[in-house]
Image (cartoon, rainbow, N blue to C red; front, side, top):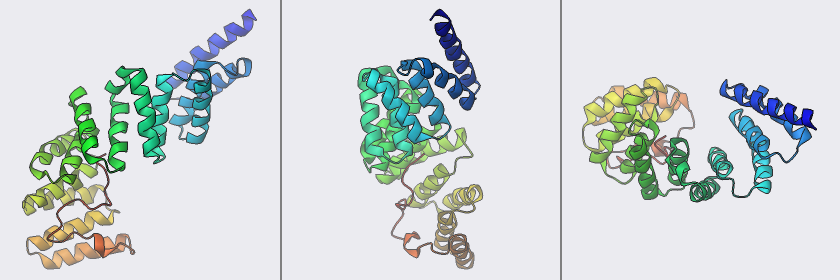
Length: 269
């Protein structure tokens, strides 16, 4: 028995080292060895779930997390991890419920941007824009350099029609993460809503360069070109949108009276 416990301790230690190196497959092998000896070992169950989650095997990860919760229903970190998985699976209400449970059990988790961002994102995807705005603002308060949260604040303000206040957080998000496309798109909509078509066009073209296969990028460029009187170039941009996605519905092309973000773009992340 003493030798078994030593093996377990060794496997847990090795699994932790491999996880830190992002060798989640190797770490999982270590935790599965522990579970052969002790099928209800709480830390091994939770860590195995974490390894599977990082590899994108969400159903298997949920199984291990559920087994961990059978042993300890008040395990806040596991509830939080389930919240992240549910969000990725587009099970947004379950994500919010799991994260709320985790936050009640361990309030410090709400201060971790990984979880606070996911909570805000799930609210946004359920159409709870004002609640999402509050959550994104709280995340920015915890970390002013959180690009995802800043983008979320800008998106929510855009959705609520507050173009003037949306501009600053979106520009900040772009500065922090220049390779993330959505803030460019939303900033383009904001500037267009403010009547700053030349500035909006510059940002829209930056977005289309980042996501050349996105038909919305080209249609937005086309709309802005038409607004400043460059009709021939606008037609070419619309053609590129249709070439990119032949079934792209002209109904989502923005019109002179519709300066808000199309519903195709749901969140600021």
